[in-house]
Length: 103
Image (cartoon, rainbow, N blue to C red; front, side):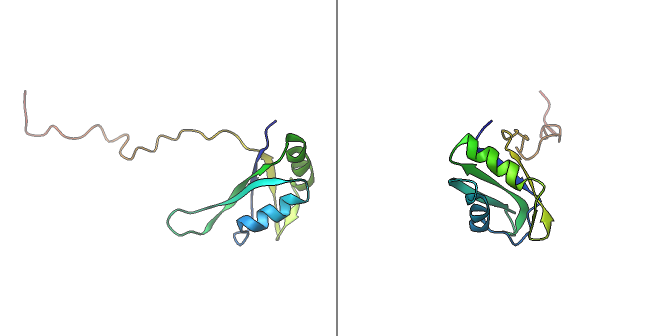
């Protein structure tokens, strides 16, 4: 088990400092970040928290998973490594170019 936790189904008005305060009751919080939409800056309703130890992380999972906070039932579990989703922009458009030139 790691120290980094995923926290989902957050109310959209929860800030990173709110998240840190919520998790601090289970131990030292090294970082807390609510993920925001790149364009609007609004919360996406989830975030990540890194606890000081694995024991503190497990305590936070046990204490907060499926508990209600700000009217919503939280999902708290160990964060999974980020998947590479490709991203590179024009994937799947066949490569383009090449019109009118014959070799």
